[in-house]
Image: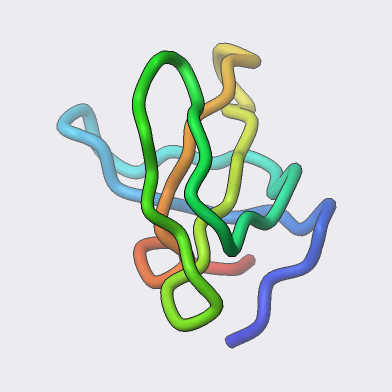
Length: 67
């Protein structure tokens, strides 16, 4: 599965499945919302924007579902 910028993606939260948009792929260590994420080419992260709240979060690509 390959995610591209602008794709609709889904991920699981304690409240259930959330839908949003893939905003930016990261493959190097980065900070988001005061947290450090150790992204790499093998384990990329995506900054995603929630459809409901409009807030952004970082998720491992492997935890995102495209569609």
